Image (cartoon, rainbow over all chains, first blue to last red; front, top):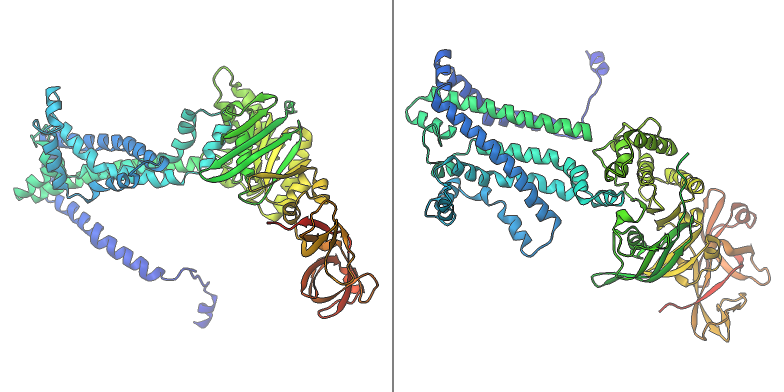
Length: 280
Length: 358
């Protein structure tokens, strides 16, 4: 016995506390994430395969899927571009009240989503500050898919800014100067030197904005108009099912949404990861 | 093998620059000769890097003119100056391979001036062998050592066939052994290419060893410009002698062109042209001769401590209240039987007198 102990190689980690921390992590992940999500999938199996297929292929549900995923992706992509621009201005230039602008970026994080939804609706309604002039041009924002897009844009923006900002701030300036001395024009410096280094962060920001946007409820339902088949989002569809005590149906839609989101996030991460591996 | 470089001169004429209220450069005039290797030497904040960046066009001179190869370059953008710049921290493109890094300057050229794909490859391969990294073009900078990265940075700068090579503390981030190796390599490379080269350093040994001429800067002003030997043998100011390595400082009194150190057994020193006032006498540690205590014409000193550094000995002496550092052959110290507390006779072989600094 003692010989066996002596022969066993001793493996010690220089950093203490591995046991308790991994235990706590597994516990938290299980209780907060894995068990509720597993419950969702279990609940969805209350439906037969035929029932499930019928539900998911109903025009109303399909339209909601297209709307939620399409608009969330589109808004996240636009947020990615706008976020890069805002991060650029905040990091690269010094101007009066810069720090206040910087703080304002987080407002969509802090604002209760219902408040944001009501404020956006008031602004973009046909008699609102933005809505009235737009309506005269024949563009209706509130109570249309465009309104949902605006709300998702608002909700996702801070994710896009905050992921790019620190990476941009950490870029070494002398690398750009090196490109300058090698004869590169500003456009080439951006496209060949800066952008490739920012791309993983931009993709992460888009992923976060998308994940937030696809499940966003509070700010969207006020401005969406919620017309079945036109401006009805998936989370609302789930709420409607719940109100009808159709828990299995709600769970099925939610589980499908979850799988769809995971696939998209995974694809973004894989792309960013491959980019980083290939380009250091 | 490499395309011949036609060395050009750089004329820096009365260049000045301020950052806010701090004066970074004040009326600096230096003529860099064609094909010369010039060191800009000075402590941090002396303006040496600012001057290099002005030559590169990364900063613009507020006053004065700059000409490269006879044409005015004061307000020229960096890409039109025909320069190659090497940064202290390499500044390589981390997301590009070594090959792509070196090819960068050729690939960003406008279509009409861009070499063909094949000639870019030929040129990069040539440079890879010049920096002794043949076959490593596919690596990423993160897979290279510090010395290798710096050589890649150099190859990248040379790829665009610059007329002038500018290096900002090129060895600053490397460890001592690699530093010396790379220094010798750079010197031999310079001899092969004959490119006008300016490099910035705060290391006096590096500047004296590597360069044809040294420009010493202090608080934005040029203190002295000359070949390393001249700088070392005839420092133009007390700043220069203090900056060029360790030196003993002693107070003295000048009267009618003669400086007296006020140390018994120490001869007066000629100090032509100095006003009758307090002054400072400088003696380098290796310019002090030691002999047995009581030898005629020597001052009496007491050994405080001594330490052996390889073949040499470093001795701390006291003459009264005056502290003195001596650097001697180990054999000399052993012949005199020096140890803590023993007395010894000292004689200054070379004393330099400078006015006391304000």
